[in-house]
Image (cartoon, rainbow, N blue to C red):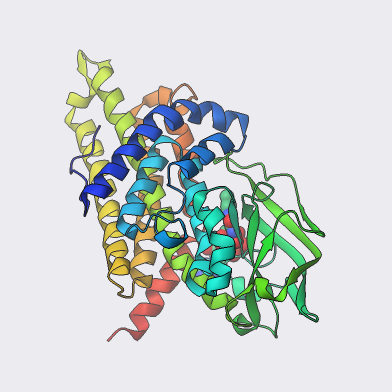
Length: 384
Ligand SMILES: Cc1cc2nc3c(=O)[nH]c(=O)nc-3n(C[C@H](O)[C@H](O)[C@H](O)COP(=O)(O)OP(=O)(O)OC[C@H]3O[C@@H](n4cnc5c(N)ncnc54)[C@H](O)[C@@H]3O)c2cc1C
């Protein structure tokens, strides 16, 4: 509604994809989002529909069933999904994150084993890095993978796992060597597996339809070839996955902020005070203008980073900047949107209070915004 600049898409195919996404978002996601979040139930049917529509493997290899799309197109699809139902967009993003280690670092055999079902959306993935005592300092993780003859045994506790309990396969970072980043390896662990169990979902303030849970590994045995990449390469794999994943979070943040904007503009046109629509007050218009400028700037940042990635340029710092700015923008725009609706913004009859609750966690996941600042600051230290 309030998008001031048209989408900038590279191909007719990308336009068709965005049209399909908008149609699914409008007809299948938006009407179910509020009730789905209230029920706190994972939207399995809607996720399956996205899988059938080819939207669960967009940036991955076509020969394995992916969409072969540039990252800039994939992220704009994510943004549209997030505008309609953020939990569903988060599922697409985290699933993509879990495909990344095998797609990027797996052997041809591993790719053919795991990716066709994951990219088709018939096998849902989760990404397991965080632990109760190791979040931002992920290199301090303590889950162990003991090497036996032809197999590994994994033991430890993972925390905050999106899709915990609903995933079919878990990409798990575990320690195969000594302390620090160099002792970590990456494993694909199928569910169910003997010794793998999941706690009841966390009771969160938002994204209630997206299950987040602790996961317990009690001597889970996997074959040696479940390890992706070299022994000790897991932390690098996990960080590389997060560079791309962060851009997904940025796109979701922009989608959420856009939805809040749209609702604020729509409401301000209808609501009357002092004999006129409140949007006619310049004080309110300036507030909406700042919101629109923030959303457009955040979108431009994630697109710039994605285009760098698509061209094969380094994009890690650009991704951190996009994640930082987009999620802070989502927080401020959703907060302002609640204000534009006055008292009605604070009640569940309108969606903006939910957008505000959802925006908060985007500043925390896939590296808190302090961690993004750390990434940016380190780049400044070494910049020429
Ligand atoms: C809904 C949800 C879904 C999630 N999904 C996943 C998932 O699928 N997979 C997964 O692996 N993890 C997931 N996470 C975990 C998430 O990535 C972590 O919560 C996040 O990395 C922060 O870790 P922490 O919670 O342990 O906070 P801590 O690391 O304990 O941080 C506490 C505070 O200290 C600050 N801080 C820490 N270190 C520094 C520093 N060096 N400089 C400045 N400030 C610092 C942090 O910014 C934060 O404000 C999820 C979390 C949530 C809430």
